[in-house]
Amino acid sequence: MSNQEQSPENRLRKELPEEVATGAGEASDAPESTDTPEGRQERQSGLTGRQRLAQGLWPPRVTRAQLIVALLLFGLGFGLAVQVASNSDSDSALRGARQEDLVRILDELDDRTQRLEDEKQGLEKQRDELENSSNQAEEARKQTVEKERQLGILAGTVAAQGPGITMTIDDTKGTVEADMLLDAIQELRAAGAEAIQVNGVRVVAGTYLTDSGNSVSVDGNKINAPYRFKVIGKPQDLEPALNIPGGVVQTLEKEQATVTIERSDKIVVDALRAAKRPDYARSSSQ
Image (cartoon, rainbow, N blue to C red):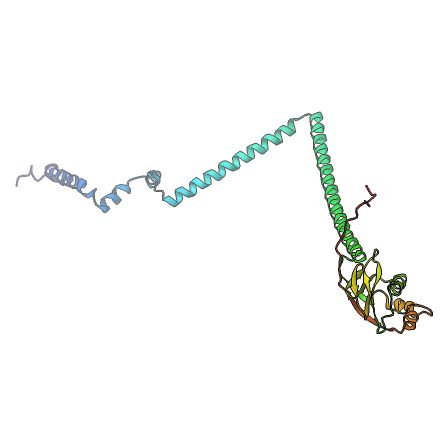
């Protein structure tokens, strides 16, 4: 080997093509390494932090749940913004109003409040009147029913019961006459009798008695002895009225009739008279 070939410069020239060839070979192999994970990692290692952040954020990867939540938040925010804007407009309108306008608005509010209060009081008054009228109507109805019952007892159109006496007149001789029985009825009425029944015939204000052979007729209904009086009233007043000296009992006993009187806490007078409408009399109340 010559000295010229062994010089450093010559040696460097000889070695350089080999180094370039080696570099070219590595360059030719580089594109193949980009498709592997090691190649991508090697390529990203050469990027800056901002470039790596941009690659991580775009394109975005959004799930369906995240999209729904985002839409709901958007709607909520929009509604809040509208409400705040509306309140701000009304507040700003009041803040920008003149003092005369504010006074007028307050007066209108006071007038409206007073009208509502008056309407409330009027409705409460109507309610009270309706309740009172309803109560009055109910009370009037009860009084009417009670009055009708009382008049029905006196007229003999309804049955009655209460304390009283039972008087039995046994006439074996047939000497008892109609006027004697009528005296007994008048004495009982004077003593406070409220309802009287004689042998199944109701005694009323227009009742009349007549003799019918050896018996007596009451309002045209023939009755026979013994004559049984069922009387409702205060027993302590009815019995003494019949037993007074020279009264009903003594008169009947003189005619050889037997009279027995029994007190009772419950006497039932159930003989009824048909309600008769008067032919001429009319109520004078308007």
